[in-house]
Length: 73
Image (cartoon, rainbow, N blue to C red):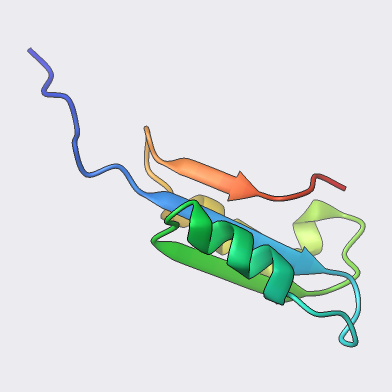
């Protein structure tokens, strides 16, 4: 029988598209959701394959973990 995991993790990913933009608003939202790990990236990557930090966040997440983003765009 499989045991239910109780150590689920919330992984958050915050991104802005320019160096001038601020990540603080997104980070504060993720803190309210009690995210254990917050990944941040300042990058115009239209193509998701260009988002190196995003890929790191996804690779950290295990089955059952939650990956949280504030806006999908």
